[in-house]
Image (cartoon, rainbow, N blue to C red; front, side, top):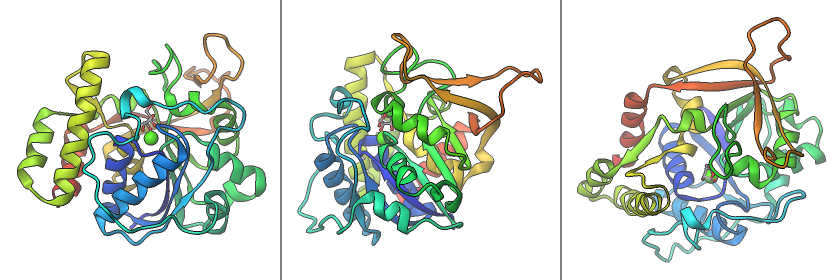
Length: 302
Ligand code: RIB
Ligand code: CA
């Protein structure tokens, strides 16, 4: 099984990604970051999901704000708690001692991937503190950016937009990077039929997933007139656990820091001529959505 550390900001899709990782990977640790909601909320949500799964991996809290930008959250999508719709219970779990960044550094080894599902602040701090870190991990599979449209601005996706300076440091660090951007994640969506199947299953995990997805669908219905929800973060897990379901291509990708209209954009060099810039990222372009949905449901219905 793929060994991984999951850095996340739960977040509805982060929660589904943790369920996927629990089923299909060896999760050594979970690290949390401010993103969809403030750090205290994302950390509590991670503890809640790990308790629901009966998972042993420790949860370490990380950065409570971006490197430079002000802390901003995706409350409109995920609610004040960051996991609106979740049926909460007294899980009795506490966050593990130690800062997430120190743990990312301590746990780094050639067999361990870092799956980044939120703003890249923790990873950027790890690189700052230990410049050898990018070469000491197996690689980074991240949900973030896009080769085309954004979701916070015309061109910027939330995880990159929330901390562009951190993202620029990660994309430039030389690690083996897989990028699952919005161009890919919008190919993998859940809808009402999914939540009905999960509700009908009746297990604690399936019911929890049904509740949070129903809440997410309602928010996106109100905000965007959608009747489905892209499963953004699970794509970054699937890229490692089920790579045969995805098509990637080597690309040069940089993060725009200054543009009035484009700050937080991942700028992808898709030129095919010899003049193109040296690739630094494996960009995911296609996913077999039907088979990926089966893999996700197998984890949630288990
Ligand atoms: O833009 C989608 C990303 O932002 C996902 O990781 C979601 O959880 C939010 O963090
Ligand atoms: Ca996320």
